[in-house]
Length: 260
Ligand code: CAA
Image (tube, protein in one colour):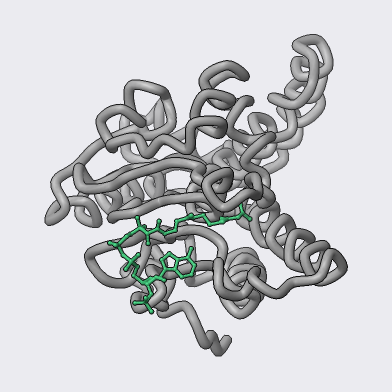
């Protein structure tokens, strides 16, 4: 597929997607949001892509938010369309069938943090700054931040971050449970790829179903979540991967999963 704002590189099944508007600190305008929707479709459909890594072009920003210039003259109707498109892009990334890792290489603000929160987890460079500074502009997070962040770190910490517009260092964001791992800027992609290749050794269908169970289950009460897991679990027993994984263990050899 053709993208006007994202560059792609496939490294042995790990697709590195760089949001490519460095002059605007990779801000999310409608073109980028449409490209993210297309990208999520491509990742789902293209068998050569096993895992997606999202990062920002340049050494300054992952994504510095929704495009402020694009929002300046938006009518409420246009803002509604922009918000719908932002939500569609975030949800498609969140519900991608394959794993998605955010490699946060710099400013990760507003819509940028909302995008990173839609990924399965976040690794960040020690230079990164993360926050939801929308109230500085007299608006508030509109691409899922008021919903995904409290579910991740709790209501009170989320409200403090949103109300104060504070920018957290990568280290603080790790302490707050937003970032899984902090890396030097030079080693960020290497560390992400190392984890990606660990994941790719596992059963792909098992990862896909585990992701569904976690994503769909965390929004339910515990009994409904457990019921969901019980409903999904038996389906893995119809896969070749399950036979291969269990046989390989019993034969004391590495499994060779085919994703079927
Ligand atoms: N949208 C559009 N352009 C942006 C941008 C954004 N979110 N963030 C930065 N830029 C542009 C700047 O306007 C500037 O462009 P020019 O060179 O043409 O002037 C360029 O990127 C470089 O930025 P700065 O000169 O400001 O760089 P800096 O190092 O001095 O500051 C920064 C970096 C602290 C990230 C600062 O750019 C900043 O505060 N950006 C805005 C962050 C923000 O408020 N994000 C939330 C956006 S609203 C949102 O996301 C809504 C939502 O939830 C849906």
